[in-house]
Image (cartoon, rainbow, N blue to C red; front, side, top):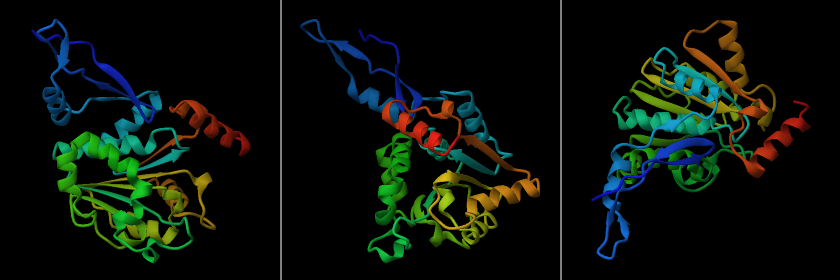
Length: 265
């Protein structure tokens, strides 16, 4: 007879995830063996719930799932789970057919040029920088569904795009748009994005204004000031800049705290 054990609690990017243990059956010699097929089926059809690790993360998840909040500005250092939480929410909405498309976009400024100078598709160029987001989506919707939805990264239900390539594009589908490293966008790029987002699109701008590489005011900074100045409804800002917001442990946490101290925070 199968024996059910307690769930396993794992930590993914600082977020606690409950993973059900697989059922175990007795073997002829009295041992037990896991029923792998059933475990994988459960994980594919019912991904484990994500548990917010801090009160601020709980509020972040609330904003991500609030239909009245159309755009969220998420600030903070790495290790706070700001991008991971957005990816989990987008994937779960996609799995439940609440949205039709996920777009992951990123500014490309590492070399001082756009990724157009590099050979390959947008997915090939940006994959090293958005891999964590894509891996999270894959874990939530399953490998098969992920491969079908991603296709070539440009023409599927999951898109990977450079910010420059989506300027002026309209987002009319039920979609979830994640802009990672949004502090690297220019004012013109941000204007062309926020003015094209329809009521059926959720926009999540993840970044840290202290880590920008562009000169002058970034698009993220401009949008924050603009939204506050005009008291825009449907725009929320959440800031993970306090040391207590860093949910990763070990060296990553120590480095993040050290950077904040160097900046006089």
